[in-house]
Length: 161
Image (cartoon, rainbow, N blue to C red):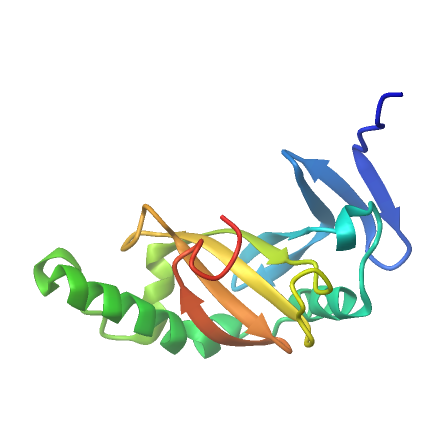
């Protein structure tokens, strides 16, 4: 018997969730500055429609990010930029006068909400996945726990590629 491939799923709280290029993407998006960023989820245990209460809270937090989220998280991302800048040398990358300028070097891809049970996460967690000019091979991953950014690293170092 052939397994049914789902194109979309309707969630009572978040509405339509579409399967796009093997990623489940909410119809709603998170707003970061003036940009709308898609939210992708992996359902718990691979079961279509199965979102844990922690995943649901992580999605709510991503949808409710404050309007100044970019200025709040800029120092964390700038720290990642500066570490990389020191590794490759100052001549390759300019020093930024204002931390908020780091976002000029970043292109948002999506927000990823991992399966919390499978990854043994005990607080609402999501990751901003982005391309960045200073690390084009690996990109940037900013982790949010309880709605607050607390880590910035290369994609693949701490999460899915």
